[in-house]
Amino acid sequence: MPRMPTSFMLPLLVVMAMLSSWSSALIAAEDPADDKDTKVKTVQHIRPEACKKCHEEIYEQWKGSMHANSSALRDPIHGAFYQKVMGDPKKEGIRGPQIPVKKDKYPVCLKCHAPVAAIEKKTKLDAKQAYENGTSCVVCHSFYEFKGTDSPKGKPWYGIDAYKYDTKSLYGPSGISYTTERTPEDAKWPTPVHHPQPMKGNKAALFKSNDACMGCHDKRKNAHGTPLCLTGAEYAKEKSFINCQACHMAIVSVPKLEKGKVVPGEFVSIADHSMSGGHDGKMITRGIALSMETDKKKDGTIKAKLTVRNRLPHSYPTGAPFRNFFIKVTAYDKDGQELWKNYKVHPIKDDPKSAFWYAIGEADKKKPTSPPYATDVLKDSRLGPNETRDLEYEIPKNDKIAILRAEALYDLLLPPLKHKMKGKLPEDLLKSKLAASVELRL
Ligand code: HEC
Ligand code: HEC
Ligand code: HEC
Ligand code: HEC
Ligand code: HEC
Image (cartoon, rainbow, N blue to C red):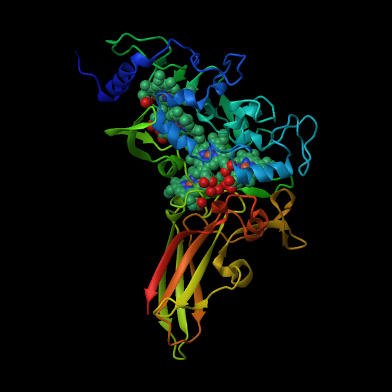
């Protein structure tokens, strides 16, 4: 047998090993369509569970991700906002109430949060699994071209509007050619590799660049033109060369799964589809670093200089406008008894320099409002891409002070929202999470 490059042999071997479990299906015919009475007519309706058969590890990562939970029926935070501004996600034809949508228009949220419903201009999200499943496998993998997020007329293109997508074929980045026909077991190149759903592996330029993410993560404004989310714009300003996938889809080696069980001793190396962010207590620790120096003045006051660094090519925190973090500086005695703290209730009120948040609202009233009503940006004190900021604290003389500790605490929601949502959201989503800390023994 002539020597073949291993990069080609590997997928071929995997495919061969899978021969036994094949059906001659075109579009997952062995998997019933979401609607019991019809066959899957477009790739957008193939269930993620159909992909799970062979991509179990990727499926499990995706299943736990916010992409799998992006629809109003799955994400309790988005669900609560959506219900309030757009209406009942289980009803057809909703248009409002808070954001009045013209009769011929469609609720914009779904273009990113439930893209298949948006493609089909439906709002009853429990009507089809594809709507409820939000940003599922077939959403991203049916994209074949990124159009950009600004239409030629200067109107924003959000989510699915920013992409050209196929309804008959899926796409991937490897450069391999696929066929849905069975290929002989001893097939050699140039025979294409089998894939049960139509698949073209020639879209590296899309899948290995930020283009794969920007349609939904670039920027978004409300009806008054006030920017709500700016991740892409932040990144563009930084002129970074690292793509989103480098951090959000790192190559990870995970235990091989077969029918839900770990295959002992076997691992697969895959692009991590967990795509974690603010919801992940570990991910939030990756971008931020704290260091601290102290100086004792003659009168016994302790001067502490805290340096906060953002190590990311986008803001920290980035994303939804209510993401925020704050710095808690505490002086303790040798037994850990608290002697001094930099705020009483919350730094937003008591120590503004220690609060990193994005305030939007009405400029004339200088009052923050909820995103749909904001007419202006009042303040953006989040750490910009790669920004380093020094904060100074003066701690009054107290001879018992033995430990000085600073913590960065991350919140998905701003304090007033947390307060409002108490009892309505799972407790875990309302808890501040430790993103970084530094401690000095004096
Ligand atoms: C948010 C968009 C998105 C979603 C949702 C998504 N993928 Fe991907 N997928 C990508 C991107 C981007 C890559 C390319 C990563 C790279 O090569 O840097 C990729 C790569 C892959 C690969 C290539 C193998 C590898 O490890 O590189 C497979 C297989 C795959 N995805 C399957 C799936 C399956 C199955 C699901 C659903 C369970 C899914 N994807 C959901 C964006 C997505
Ligand atoms: C019967 C097994 C099987 C099923 C079912 C299956 N795949 Fe695959 N898929 C493979 C094999 C084998 C490869 C090639 C090796 C690899 O990359 O893992 C592959 C490759 C891919 C790739 C990489 C394409 C490239 O070369 O760039 C993507 C993306 C992908 N599959 C997505 C999906 C999605 C989405 C589904 C569900 C709609 C799905 N697959 C269902 C077996 C399967
Ligand atoms: C079709 C739209 C779409 C595409 C394409 C997309 N995403 Fe997302 N993504 C979303 C939506 C919607 C959410 C928010 C879900 C929620 O919180 O309700 C999200 C959430 C996230 C989060 C935040 C998780 C958290 O903890 O809050 C990260 C990180 C992320 N996506 C990364 C990526 C990356 C990296 C890519 C490109 C490889 C990508 N996304 C492509 C729609 C998309
Ligand atoms: C150097 C690593 C790195 C790169 C590159 C990177 N990110 Fe992030 N990203 C992070 C970390 C760490 C976090 C968690 C802290 C935060 O929210 O800022 C994060 C958070 C996020 C979130 C979560 C926001 C939320 O609401 O919870 C989104 C969305 C996101 N990134 C999108 C992107 C996109 C899109 C790109 C490419 C333009 C990108 N990131 C590039 C590391 C990175
Ligand atoms: C351009 C795509 C896009 C549109 C349009 C969009 N969103 Fe989002 N939304 C996202 C992404 C991406 C995230 C998660 C990452 C981040 O924070 O940026 C998100 C996050 C959220 C969150 C936070 C969810 C959580 O778990 O904390 C809420 C709430 C939300 N969106 C509500 C809405 C509402 C309501 C609308 C319609 C009025 C809407 N979004 C329109 C892309 C979009």
